[in-house]
Image (cartoon, rainbow, N blue to C red; front, side, top):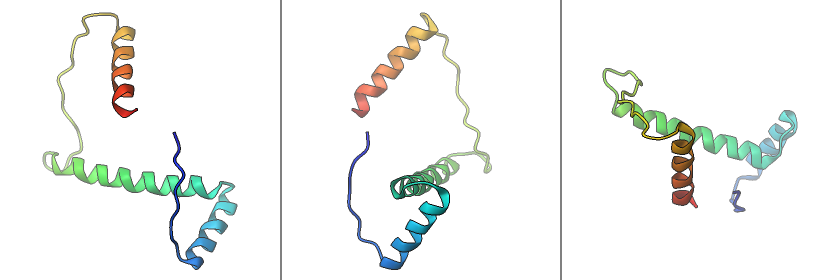
Length: 86
């Protein structure tokens, strides 16, 4: 779900952003969305590295054996996640 918002931005930066969007064949919203997602992912990577051992980014976990059909388990997990983010 997209949300509409407004920002205050320097006129020169706005013009450069418009030119970048034209060069890439994208709209400005897509360019801004990509930039924000990249920044958020960068912060996530940094946070994960704090908890890693000796600078590795591997996460260790114990697999869980399903008690039912895999598709039922996945559907249940998706429904649970959807209810939490809605």
